[in-house]
Length: 265
Image (cartoon, rainbow, N blue to C red):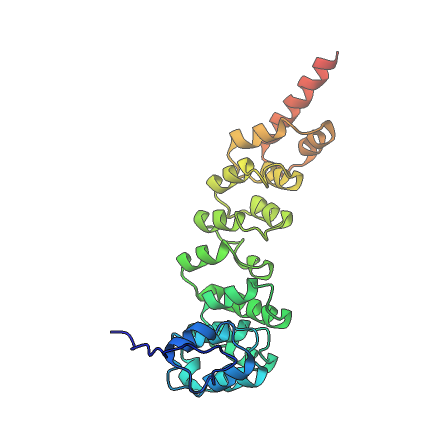
C-alpha cells in the first residue's frame, strides 16, 4: 500500500509554502518547478522519499550546496536513479560528480556519456569508465551498449567476431566511415556481416568500405565480384597488381577490365 497523501484544504503555491513543512501532495506537485528556497527546505521534510527525490533532482534550480548534501547522504545515494540524476544535474560540483560516477552501473554511465547537457569533463570520465568495463559485460550487454555507445567506446566493440554485436555497432549513429572500413577489412568479421555491410544504405556506398570488402578474403565471392563492377579503371588495375587481394577477385577485376577495353574497340 502506498503512502497516504495529505491534502491541504487550500493548496499553497511553492513560494508561499515552506518546503520543510509541505505535505506529500505539495512536494509531488512543486518539486519539479519550485524555487531553490523550497528545495532547501524540502530536503528536511519527513515526507521526502525515494519517489520524491528524483523530482527534486530534475529541478535545475537545485543549488550545488544542496546537491552536495544529497551526494554525501547514504540514504539517497544507495538509489541508482538518484546517483544518475545527481551526476547529470547542471549544478552538480565536478568533484562530487566524479566520486558518484564510480558507483554507477554501466547503463547509467552510458546515459551520462551520451547526454550533451552534462559537463563535458564528466561525460569524458563516464566514457573512460565504460571503456574499462566493456570486457566484463555479457554479450547481451555489449550488444545493447553497441547501439548507443559514444565514439570513445566503439573502438572496444568493433574488433569482435560476433555478428549480432557488429550489426548493432553498424547501426550506431556515432560510427564513422573509418570504423566501418575497419570492420569490413577485419579478418575476424564473418561473411554474413560483410554481406550486410555491402548492402548497408549508409556504409555500402563508401569507397573505403567497398575497397576493404573487396580485399577481405572472408567476403563472399559473389559479393566481392559484384562490388568490383562499379570500380573505375584505375582501381581495377590496382586490384590486379595487389597480390594481397584474393585470386578470384583479381581474376574478376582483370576480366572486367578486359571487357571494358573490348567494348571500347
